[in-house]
Structures are given as C-alpha cells and as structure tokens.
Amino acid sequence: MNTLEALIFDVDGTLADTERDGHRVAFNAAFDEFGVNWHWSEEVYGELLAVTGGKERMRFYYDNYDEADEIFDDFKLRIDEIITELHKAKTVHYTELLSTGAIPLRTGVERLLNEAREHGLRLAIATTTTPENVTSLLEHTLGKESIEWFEVIAAGDIVPAKKPAPDIYDYALKQMQLDANQCLAFEDSSNGILSSRGADLATIITVNGYTTDHDFDDAALVLDHMGDENQACKVLAGQMDNDQLNVDTLFEIHRNSIG
Ligand code: XBP
Ligand code: MG
Image 1 (cartoon, rainbow, N blue to C red):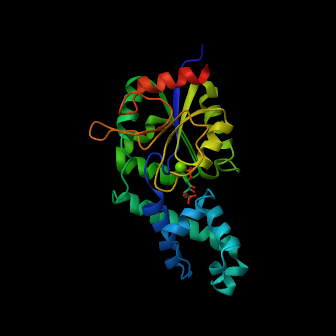
Image 2 (cartoon, helix red, strand yellow; image 1 turned 90 degrees about the horizontal axis):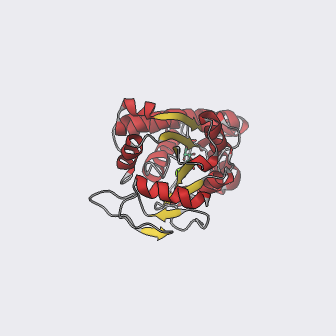
C-alpha cells in the first residue's frame, strides 16, 4: 500500500497571502521606477491573476488592456526586453517588502509544517513564482534554516509551462523520486488545482480573497484556512471533524484518495 510520504505546497495564496499586498505592490513599484504609466488596482490585478507568472502576466496585460498602450514608443519596440527588466526590478521590490516582515504566513501554516516535520513527512514546494521570492518569504517568516526543511523548491522558469500545466508538480515528484499517490498537494486557486490534479495529486485547498469563487470540485478538501488554536477553520467542501487541519486528517484524506 502507498503511504503518505510528502506534502507539496504552493506558495502564493497558500503559504501566505502574497498577491494583493505583495506582488501587486511590487509590480506597481517597478512600473513607477521605470516611468511606465501602468498601475494595477486590486480589481485589475484580480483579473490578471488568471495568468500565472509575473512576466507572462505583464505580457498579457500589454497585449489585452487598452490602457497598457500608454508607454514610450521605444519601450514598445523593445517590449520583451522591457518586461524582463521590469520583472527583475519587481523581484527586488518584492523581496525588499518581504524583508520588512510585511507578509506573514497564513493561519495554521507554521503549525502544520512543524507537525508534518515531527511526523517525518517530507516537504516540497511547487510554485510559479521566482525562486528568490520563495526563499525570501521562508527566511523572513520561519527563519533562514527553514529553507532546508523543503527538499525540493520547484519554482519559476525551472519548467517552461507554468501552472495550470502539471509540469512543476511533475518536476517536484521526479526530484523526490515519489509517485503522486504518495503525496498531497496544497493549493489556493483554480490554476493551482488544475496543475496539481493534472499531476494526479490529491489536493487540499485553502481559499483566499481572490479565489473564493474558483472551481474546486476536484479538491479532496476545501477550507477557508488551515486553522490554529486561536482560530478554527471552516470546511467549505469535503469532510473534516477537527477545527484545525492536522496530520491525522492528512493521513485520512490520503487514505481516502487512494481508495
Ligand atoms: C503565483 C503567481 C506568481 C506571482 C508572481 O501562482 O502567479 O506569478 O503572482 O510571481 P501560484 P513572479 O500560486 O499558482 O504559483 O513575478 O515571480 O513570476
Ligand atoms: Mg497560489
């Protein structure tokens, strides 16, 4: 029988609520720095989240939004290069923001990671964001040594096809030499679950402000957050008897998922 060996976590929206007050703010700071007349409101950013990856998201905006045309003519001629430069600047702004401690981990994340480690579960990350964003988030929330807790950090351009393609999860599984039925994935969005389910991983969802209306029919469990001793979590779909997501529940979900 396949036992549960490892947990694979998405980062943005799952480990921390990074999008609205983190990535979005950093994109806007990069636009200002370059004198690019773009500004992503919370609402527009919610639409743009349909596209994963920061470079891909800027390109989509440039191609599809009328107001994106208000940039210098020489920038239009060099748009691919400008997007690459904007993205490098955005990563600097974003990691600077993280270093101030502005973005905490979501409720219950640290508790569950600690419990998982105590039970000897292996940990990995599968995300579309840039690798230094992941290590910076871990360093400034859990401490530098926590980077070592994750035996694989699969991130960014390491695979050419980002979520919703399954490639980043397939890559993490291959690195860990595990099959999908030995693991659980943790996600927050429709693109995320398309990717994890595409790799055949049973998936637990914790929704956030941008993703409450997404389709999670294929999830093993949907929660508002993971819960901790001060804040019970709500079950939005699926079955869980506790008011915090704990390792016993993970083993149970895994058992049910492999039938
Ligand atoms: C996260 C993303 C990322 C970030 C931006 O998706 O889409 O693109 O918003 O990161 P997921 P970069 O949570 O599904 O991995 O700018 O570093 O690409
Ligand atoms: Mg996510």
